Length: 373
Image 1 (cartoon, rainbow, N blue to C red):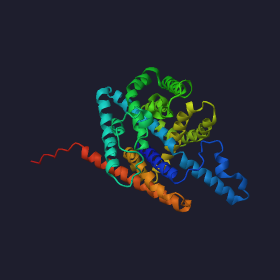
Image 2: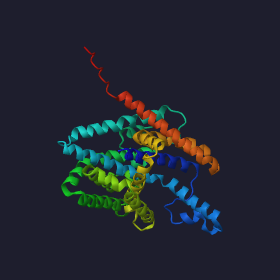
Image 3: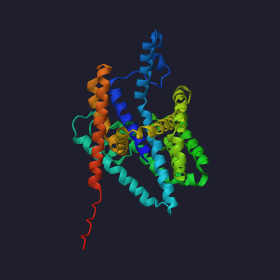
Image 4: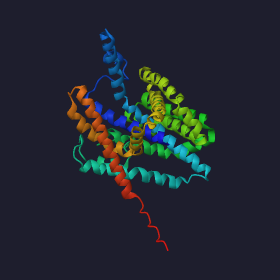
């Protein structure tokens, strides 16, 4: 599925660019009610050129600052991949959950620990906190423990690892529910549980917002369940699913959903549903466009490569992005934007290279072929 690697490639590069961009400048956020007026400045549109400049600022700054929506895309993509592989394994005889969990942990932890080592020894990184007792909590991945001190510790992007651990732990139960109740009832049930957890943590018994973001896996279960539904549908009829997703309808559905998702930020108690809506919209738009990008030989190949190493890029990039982008503060956009792109390309190469080297080191040695008689 080249389109899925291209989708993840766009998403991880978007995340890296977002973290770099917000260290360069901090303009109004597109989730704010006054974003269009403050950034577009329509009162200055007294001709075609000012109009185009205003719209360009709105689109450019809006897309740059919505990079955090790619987190929801990755949650959807994780549910998609796991459900699709589990359905196919079930068709071939069943899933051995013990070996499944072991293989997932073996996939996740080595690169995560390696990223900690890189942080300790590599120069040119932002070091905003001391290395102390929290380092051992971070190594465990259980960053919801003492969440106010540990969730963003050392490398703020690592909070996502904590969320993925929880969703992987929930997956066997969720997959059973998917098979037991059917995809529609399963998705409705998972969404209700997720929304109830978010409403409880936001309104009934307010807690740290970090629990809602991902410290409590139930809060992001709706996006994960949506991805599982897509994965199950893809495993059932891949050609039909990809035709819907990659040939226009899926992209159009995501594009129409996005304004509604952004508007939900302004609705009372709307944050209960925001992450689900933005995660679905972001996945449909980026995945829907991936068929086009994949058809461009060089660009499609590089994006697919970035997507295949997105895990390493994610674990490595943020302290470097903060360090290098901080030198661009005060620089005009004409000079800063190309340098931000160079930062993204460099960090993508570095993170992908480190993951590739670690994978090669951990790979089982291939037995030599016996000599021919």
